[in-house]
Length: 382
Image (cartoon, rainbow, N blue to C red; front, side, top):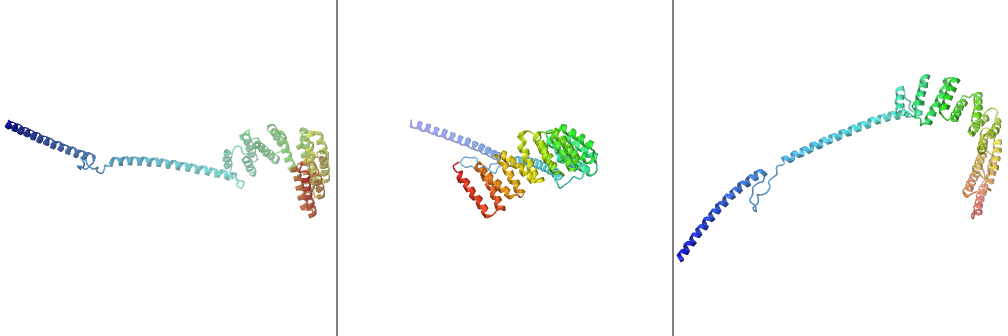
């Protein structure tokens, strides 16, 4: 039995050894296959084979050829974008430069010290500013300097058609220029013909007063007098018209006729305008007529309307400018006795003090200051 057991053990050992040998051969084959696979992978992936902790080894330097190609493509795209951006900037700068050149030319033409030298320059200017009466009038003057009267008239007509209808003042300025043109180079018939046309398209009173100014500049008193009669009939309720008429009379050979104009005006205009009319006439008398007549008119106004602080101020100013210092001083003394607010009293005391400092003495200056302090004390509780 022991021998049988030994034989069995011997057979088992041989079988085990054979199996072990077979397994080792298989493992060697597998290792060889693994080595071949590793080598292939290493060749494919760019890794150097190293048997380190059962890994495939350390990574070798990667092949950056594809990445470099991608980077080259990106750089090319970026360069292309930069090139387009630079081109856009260049075009933009070029456009800005051209615009600036145009603006400089326009500014040069608009410059009061620079006069365009050709009709083409004026044409470009009127295209850039079609509603500017200033440019159109300069264009007219350009033709007048060349004695091209008809062309100046054509420019005026073009201006009236071109200027926006909302720009009433601009159109009015061109109409005035047209009237001046006809007054200088036309006849009485052409002046009145254009005047009637202008009155239909503009404020009639403004246009009448403008033509009046043209007649006054011509120094033709008979024509002006005749036109004033037309004005006072057509606009008899206008304070401005009567004041212009009074100024015309005061500046003429018979300044006393201004009083008759004032009397007629007071009959024609509404009562609510009487104070304005009388005070304005009084100021004209001080400046162009008789200071005594002006003083009489103002005295009547401040007596009738003692609460009108503005009238007192005008009266004091007129007396001071006419050289009647004593009269201005008396007016200040009267004014501070009125029932005044603190602000109004301060105004009169300040004017009185300035008057004394300019034309009075130290004692008179101190007297004004003392009276001002007394007024403050008396009205402190008011």
